[in-house]
Length: 171
Image (cartoon, rainbow, N blue to C red):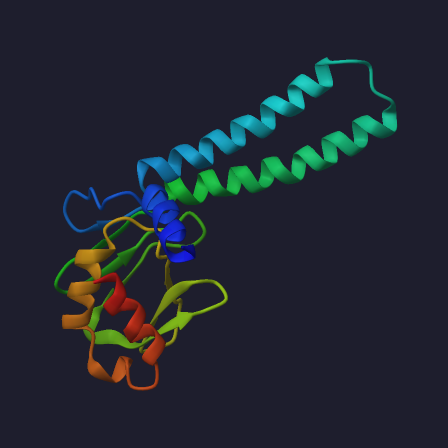
């Protein structure tokens, strides 16, 4: 039952991979969820501040709490709208609002790791510079995983069975 429920929730958030070309990005539903979450928190804060007069201590507590939730919602919006990765037969170009744009050729992949606590794949280049983080909620993973399984050198899987299994499940 848990797997069915998790699949239904993630299926809704990830949506079908309606991806033009070879891109990985969050679905419209996930983006809408992020934006709606931010708007709800901001709306509740504004309505509360416009309601009955609050003591200074209550205002500080409300503004502090709202600031935390607005920051979380804003970071979701930035992540869900800003991540756009593209890939082809030669490699992957990684675009994230949190780091610089970079490209790794498939032949330059040293290893692929599954991060069980964070639930994402790390693609590690030979020079061990910046890792690429790919979350399972990204849309378009099916064709990406199939291509990665074909193109990534076999040594990248040698000591990473979890990563290989994760990519096989995505494919």
